[in-house]
Image (cartoon, rainbow, N blue to C red; front, top):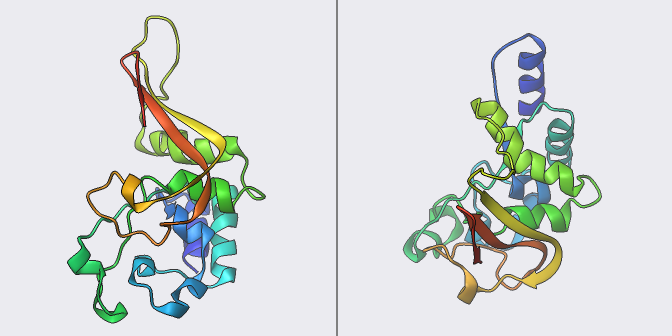
Length: 185
């Protein structure tokens, strides 16, 4: 219903924007069957039909971009019985990989990069960065094909609230270029 409302508002010329969390594109409420509090997020996971509507909204331009919805919590806030746990999971380190792993039949690598990097800049009225001689380079470097296992010991966030620990994912950040200097992730 929300996607339909955003679509109608945009069609009516209203100035509205909309994003979707990578996890909401990739998973449904079936993940909640075991009451793992790491899956307790906001907006919550919904049905397969809702996930399909989100993906359609993303591909037809109703939804402007994909976000990580990174919501870190300490152990005391998430390691509780499901009803008492806070909403949220970390997502910065896995958002791109989730899309590469679970949406490869729906979104090309170019679509994913566009929806994570260029679309938010357009929405905010920011210029797209350029890569050319003499310009300061600030880039994220990804290997879109590498398969890797997300392990708790490698999480760089101060929080560890992720249901993806132990999961094999496709695509990973391998480093950054900041002011012309490469730093490995």
